[in-house]
Amino acid sequence: MKAAVLRNFFAADGRLAQIPAQYKKKLIAMQHLVEKLEPGRRYTEKEINAFIQQFHDDYATIRREFIIHRYMSRDNDIYEMNPRDQWTKWEQV
Image (tube, rainbow, N blue to C red; front, side, top):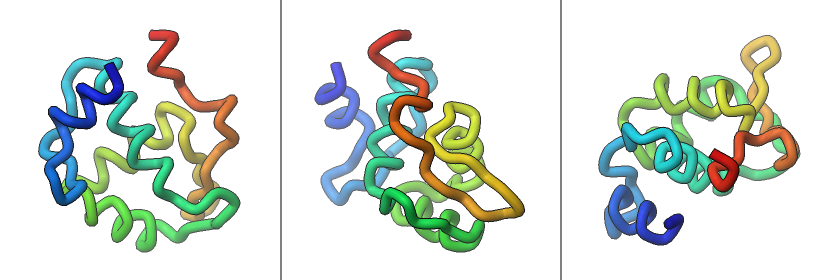
């Protein structure tokens, strides 16, 4: 399933063509993006926006999804990746 979602929603250049509407597919896409971040690094909101914009123009929605699904946490506009065991797991949806 994961390979099919990545193939169907990501262009050859790595950009997310569209945010999947189906919950499980959206989680797969969000996890794929967040895995490209540097673990342990703290990002400013501006840095997170710039990172997301490499893959999709709607950085605000994707940033919100990162927080909602516990891929990242935010404290005083500083974003940090959460440990994987806190992430919403698409395999369990």
